[in-house]
Length: 393
Image (cartoon, rainbow, N blue to C red; front, side):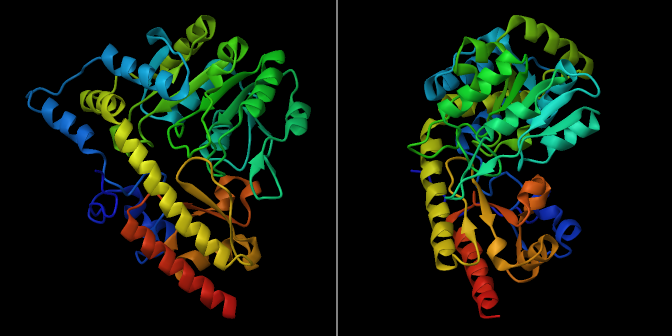
């Protein structure tokens, strides 16, 4: 029913991953697989809803309709078992903007914000820009290459000035979907120490069976009371260009505190076409998403086979969620700069360097495999050829 074998070309568009090739990689001759959006067509039911709205000749200021938030609330209840209310929800144009407002709302300059690396760089960059104290609690890698929380280090890093945890769930870039017991242990420590948890759950729909996303706010009454959750359609349906997500703040006291910082920024209500697209995705998107997940698993399986063939050089971190592969390239014997250059000039692929996710990412690269089948075949071809050549040297 849904065909992910090919997609429209983005070469002549202003797509970030294509437009910035020369600036970032020093050449146009790379296949970009870095920015976390999909090279897969945004679903027709989203685009059709936008086209229908454009039949009205006025595109002016509009409020986000309750029906859009209610569609999201119903989706989150059905797929993830979390019950948000309409009054919990705020519009946001991006998760990074939401994070900045949360830091402003619940911390003061010099107070501690916990970040669990390796992680998406705005987690630590935003903390620094807002002049908060960055508290690094690196994830712990297990024997099979997967990651878990370092609970002892987490508890040891907390003091009276530690006010906020930035939780990435599912985790970008390591692909973990946190288990209930892992999250409960974190929640208990945070509740006991009056630490607010900002849960970036933007990848919550991109989870592979038998794994299941557990919203932080669904864990317990205590977890709900200390949670601020960022959710949306941007990753799930390749709709980042609509610049619409939401923030859920269930606790009334926290919501009032959050709203003060939120109003200072003047988020307003976003764009009318985004409202329509957002609602259509949550109303009509379930079948498309299930088909997408099957496609992504096939792409990941191709990477897994490749890594088995070159196991001494490159290892694929086990994935449970997201469409971002975390490649352990330490077996190649290259320093970080040389590793990045090898991918650009030998494999002709533009990837995210592991170091951009913190020092814990040294020796790794992140590859976005949310591409059509024909593009994935080309990625595998380029990478296999470069690895074969490297293996002989």
